[in-house]
Image (tube, rainbow over all chains, first blue to last red; front, side):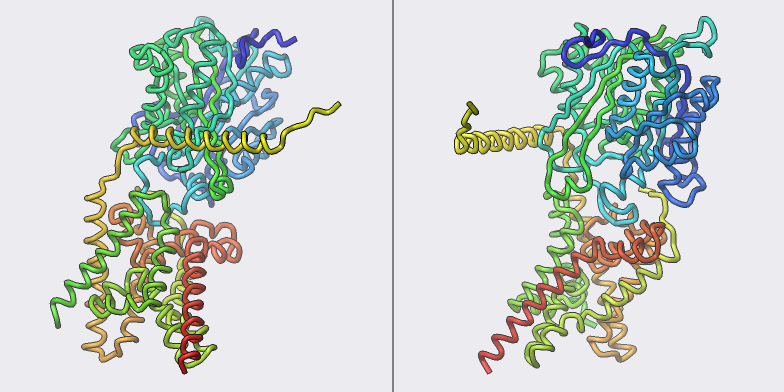
Length: 346
Length: 121
Length: 170
């Protein structure tokens, strides 16, 4: 009997896992953006003193994880399972980070939706009693993603106006059954329920139109979540999509209003990580994207605001475009996915 | 020195680039596809003897853009065809040997020496 | 008893579904386009025109210098100019400057032979960590390969056709 399931796609956590540690790291472009102050560490050089972009991303992910473990006042031996994913072929970054950290590892691939995916699965594992402490994380790097999915970085071309900028960032949180390392009286963030998204393909084929390709799946997940839980959008202080970017955010807003949601409430309660990480004058065209985008914005600005008591209830919906280099060469359209996790301050 | 020669080079060279820009902006074609289209169209135009007049008019304005590369290949083939079958086959590469050779060899050496830079765009 | 499926009817249904899907995708694509800022066509074209024109004019000046002052033949001078442009473009790529110029000039530097030169070094330099043979050596041709393949194939076909016509005529 699936007694923790509610409605068609939503699960409710009985134990409401606590987020007891968080860590993130950003690259050079992120350090010039509006959220620079929200990072634990910023890089002057995206190479991070390593020999290749992939190694740099791996080191960034490890740094973010170590920071999260440190904040949780744990040792890495205390982490039961590490859940992580990224964008490189066969999730190389995460696997190689796990090799060095020696933590039991489950690799995830949800494209840019990985941060929420890892939070959802992590919360489920804790709620099911399979683990006490879980590491949930995701990372992306502009140079590794760009050369894999599009063109070499040095190649001379003009980015279309809809192209998005893959964030060079990593974020990690430690989920736990008990808030033992949080001092009495301090605010602590808990995961209450989650909605697992369906893959939705709106037929977009242009790999430079990611926001438009993913927006329908985010709309679907959000509407299903609201229906399953019986909540309205203003139940949350903030509904946050992962990396729809400027264009995707506009489409999402329009589609939500079209679906019958109150326009004012949508404007007041909905935002997108991809539009927050960079400012428009940073020449990022469509805004930020990548696993690291929602991972870093959530573990940075959003967690900070929740800890400070500025906001108390959020719905994090990282969005992913499940294309591969092969599928786009074969002329396939881009399927989108979005998972949602509801978090609240206690 | 003929000033008109320079003006034509500028106009034709710039004009071919504008065609490329329009293709880039209005279609979903990526840069490699556009390069292929330009080279093949240069070959085809020259095969119909349509590119030679442009070259006569604009000189480097027509030979420096990629259709000029296609023109060069086709011209080699057509000149070779007058001599015989083998020359028709070796002609294209013979004509473009210097360009391709340098691009390959120098490109390889350069990429062995330098390391990729973080994007500044 | 197993249920019989009307195969032809199923196919028809499938075709209809596929067509419907395509129509929805097209409609959504148009809808998404409304939210996409348009590229600045005129500014982009002007930039491409002036940079492309300038490169060709400079090439012509170099050509005239080589044929005039140095007394080279028209063909040799042309070859030197091509080599020069390729070398310059590849060095600019190596220094990480070419992509900055290309961002401004667009097709103005992509369509001239400089774009071809850049398209060889860019992937090669990017993948050199994968080794000198299968990394840089192979990736040198990721973009330039198709250009060479299509160019050489089509011109060879042209050559053979011309040879055939020549033989018929002679």
